[in-house]
Length: 105
Image (cartoon, rainbow, N blue to C red; front, top):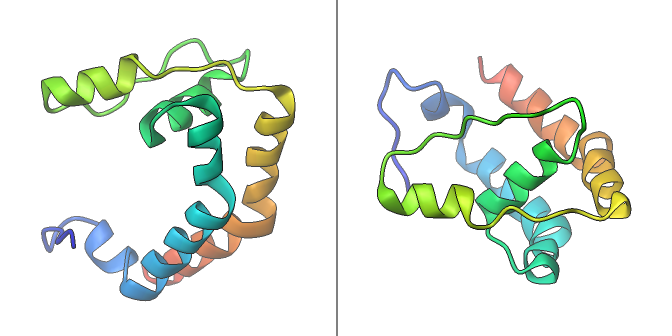
């Protein structure tokens, strides 16, 4: 498991119950798209953001050469249906998780 520093907001927002919900959502609703597009989780996340015409640039965190490869070699063109599916997941799944995180402080 990952342990965050005490002054890192994730240390009190990403408690075990929330992490379990996130893993369930990813396993049930998102990871199948990794296989479909032959991409990574980072690649899918960046591809989703870049699928909006209003977005021309993303600045992901990069700490190692491996991060550079993960963040640049796996960008894919999402089908409109998958872009919509991911957007709708906010209302059906992620919004509840975000509310739980907000309650954590």
